[in-house]
Image (cartoon, rainbow, N blue to C red):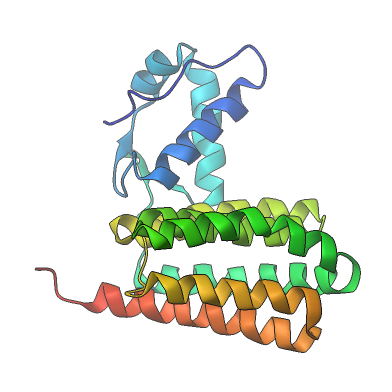
Length: 224
C-alpha cells in the first residue's frame, strides 16, 4: 500500500492528523480507489496505537471517502457515474449558497481572494500542465466557498472536493483546451465583482453542469 509518505502524528489532535493525512493521500491519488487500509499497518506507519487509527477511519467512512465492508475491511471508495453526478449536484447546492452570501456581503473581498488561484491556473495552462490547472481549479472553488464565511458550507465543500478529485482520478482535467478552463473562471470572478447575482449564479451552474457532463462522457469512453 502506497502510504510511505505518511508522517507520524504530533502530540495534538492525533485523530485529526491521521484523518487529514489519509484524506490528503486520497485526494492526491497516493491512495487509489479500491485500496484496502489496514489498522495495524497504519498504526505502525503513524507510530500510534490502533484506537486513533480506527477513529480516523470511521470519520472518513462517515464522509464517504472510505467505505467499510463487513468481514473484509476498509477501502478507499470507488465512485460510480451516479456518484459523480451526485457529487456535482451537491457541489452546486453548496457553491450556490456560498455565492449568495458572497454577492450580498463580500463581493470585493472574494474577488481579491480568488486572484492567486486564478493566476496559478493561468500559469499552469500556459505551460500545458493539466494537473496544475486542475489543482488551481479546485482551490478556486474552495476559496469561493470560504468567501461565504460559513463554517458549515466550508466544511461540506472540503469533503466534496476530495470526492471531486476521486471522480477525476488520473484524468486530472477533462478540458482539451486548458485556456477555456481558465477563461470560465475568469468570467466567474469578474461576475462576482461587477455583475448581478443572477448572472454570477448562471455562470457558476453552467460551469458545474459542463464539468459533470465532461466527466460522464470521459468515463463512457472505451478503455484503450
